[in-house]
Every structure is written in structure tokens, then in C-alpha cells.
Image (cartoon, rainbow, N blue to C red; front, side, top):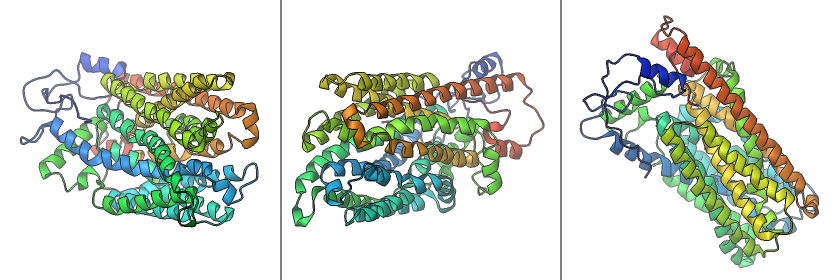
Length: 512
């Protein structure tokens, strides 16, 4: 359970800003209005009255059960349908479709990212307009259907077409889910939820390897090779789940019919105290989008994610080929691809737990980044020790796939309000996924005799870019917190003006 912890302590709601709170600001903690505890059933730190029929712990657990598992399964299937082409290539896809050029397969991977990148921000705007349960389930059904079609193509051109439309259908899944999660939880609660959700990519990698090893045994059934059955069966599964999820995917807190009126008001109030008002009642316009990009931190956040996307997709798309180069059979390759993914999920949850516990993100992003660099370093230099090379894959997955959710959560939860969060999250994911295009050309067939040194070097370079961007972002939020702590907070702004500013309001404090 992702429970919210023991949060029934209380504090006097009339407490003023004192030395302790000022110290919290200067040391870059992010919960405003911190005051000494006192009697009463209030949300810890935020002083919002909990409904008498429940407790905050029970209510957060209720939200966990309704929000996180559904979105995690949704993204697990999205990532599975996106990357199962790597498993399919082991079972005859290249040979039957006559993919013989040195870069034809890489181009098929690349074309997915073109619409996926372009439509990120429009997708999040539509998510808010149409409601999450409508938009996300529709997108899910669409990419499931396209995946089935991918298993029926007869030539390379058909594969390119289905990969393009798969990118169109999947464009809203990741930023939309991150945006939705961010509108349900306080910042001190978010990392474990984000990491669990993001961990679905690791579970998809593990599940995909196991599933492919089983489906691959259907090779020749009804005249279809094994690679076709991988696409067809996984696509059908996605379509069936999408129909069910139309009735299950949660909407935003203000629209949640599965909460009582008291619970809904309480959830909105606690989020408002933690993150500021959300301006959920107003639609997002072009001016909102332009205003978001006036903040240089938005661009830094994009590069933080961009730098890790290259090694993340490089591993997701090419791990089966790398593992097969160690001398395993097709079935053995699929089975050996599972443990590194499973280890990355476990490690990511450990990192998330301690990150939430100490209310800090920067160090918990840099630590895994260093681990990933060590893994790629081993892969570049060691070519005659299969066990050590295989162990290095664990370092790579544990590092990359643990740092990514920390970075996205850190950036997303530092954005205040519906408008800045919707646009900023979509920008970070959309811009970051340009790295997916680079990743698709990082490991070329002609590099295999050279042990893929070029691909590993590219991955290290982009991980270093992400690390440098994290340092810059951490320095920026630390500096802005200290400047705001020293500046007068009473600038005559109305509540409406503060709401419109979001995290740019002088009252807002960022998380380091």
C-alpha cells in the first residue's frame, strides 16, 4: 500500500510565520505555513480539517487504490505495445518484412516519436477539456487497435504506417497520467506514487520478455509467425482493458464522484494549501502556454528528462539484441531480459521511499544517474566476461529507470496550478522524447562487431547532460527560494493573481 503515513497530527491554524518556518524556507523545504502542532484533527503541516467520518491516512489509501493501479496498468500496456517490436524482431519480423537496410529497422522505431512529440501539449489540453476517463481510455483503445494492425502488416511500408499512428495514439498516455497524479497528491506524498506508476515501464519490460517467450512458441500457428502473434495478442488485450477502464479511470478531484462532498472539499483544500490554487475552473488558452515558456526553468526541466530518455529507450529497444549477442537462444534472450527490468522496479521504489521520507529529490536523482554511468562504463570496457556484462545491465536499468521518475516528479510537482502543470508536464515529456529519436539510431547493426561502443558512449554523454541539467535546476530553485524568503510577501496581489501565477507567486516555495 502506498499509504499516506501517519498524518493526523495537528497544528493551530492561526499560527503565523515564525523562525522555524523561515528556516524551512531557507533550507528549501516546500510545505508552507509550517507551525507547531496543537490539538485538533488537522492535516499535518497544512492545517486543513479532515472529515469526521475518516482520517487522512484512510482517505489517501482510498485515492491510492483508485488512481495509481489503474494508471500504472494503462501505462504498462502503452509501453508494452510501444517496445514489443524489440521482442518481435527476435522472432522473424525483419526477415518476413525484408528489412535488410542498415537503418530500416531504426527508422521504423524513429517514426513513432514524430507525432508522439508534436501532440504532447495539445493532448494535455484535451485531457482537461474532455476529462481523463474519456480521453485516456479512448487513446488506450486506439493504440491497442493499431498494435493489432501492426501484427497484420505485409511489408515494410505498412510497418512504418502503423508505427506512426501508434505514436499518435500514445501521445497522451505518459504526460496525461503524470499530470493527473500531480493533481491528486501533496508534494511530500508524490514520489512513491510517481515511481510506482513509472515502474510500470520496468514491469512492462519484464512482462514483455516473459510474454514474448511464451507467445513465440505459437510460431506457425494459423500461418502466422511468432512476431505477428506478439502484436495481435498484446493489442487485443489492450483494447479489452481500455473498454473496462472507461468506467474506472479517475477524473480530477473536483469531478470525482466516488468521493463524498466532504471528502472532495477536503482533498481540494489540502492540495490548495500545499500547492496553491489550481484554477481548475478555467480552460487553458494560448496565453497560458506562452506564459509558461517565459520561465527558463521549464527548458531546464526538459533537458533533465531529455538526457535520460536516450539511454532509457536505447535499452528498451535494443536490450534483446544486446543480450542475444552474449550467445543466448531467442527464448533464452527473452528470459534473460526479465531480471534487469525487475531489479529496476524494486530499486526505484526504494529510492522513492527514501526521497519522500526526507522530502528531497536532487540527491536521489544524482545517485541513480551515477549508477547508470558506471553500468555503461563497464559495457564499454569489458567484452570477455559475460557475467559482468550482464550485471552491468542491472546497473543501467536500476540507474536510468530510478532517476527518471524522480526527475519528472521533481519538476512536475514544482509547477503550481492546472495550467502551468498541464503545459509544463507535456513540454518536459514531449521535448524529452526527442531523445527517443536519437536512441533509435544509437545502436546500429554495423556496430555489433565493435561491441556497440558508439551506442554506449552516446548514452553516457546524454546521461551527463541530464546530470548537468539537474545541477542547474537545483541551483535555480534553491536561489529562488532564498530570494523569496528575503523579499516581502505582501505585494498587494489578489488571490486570483496568485492563482494565475502558480509557482511564480512570491508565496510559493520549490522543492529541492
